[in-house]
Figure (cartoon, rainbow, N blue to C red):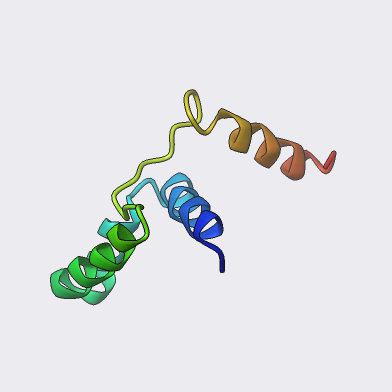
Amino acid sequence: MTINQGRLLIKLIDRETGKTTYSVVKDMRGSFSAFMWQSVAVMFNSSLKTEYDPQGSDKNVEEAIKLIEAGDF
């Protein structure tokens, strides 16, 4: 997985669950594990606490998802 694919995955997890990836990891694996994975993400200039913004910076992603869901892409 590339760094950009990882960043997109972090945002898509938030879109689908309504929770940040950090919260999902924390709930499933515990606080220490969430902290460790957040530390790895920071090394790659990313964050597990990134939220999906369909009206702002993620507008193009949202449009692509809607096209895929409609079967037009």
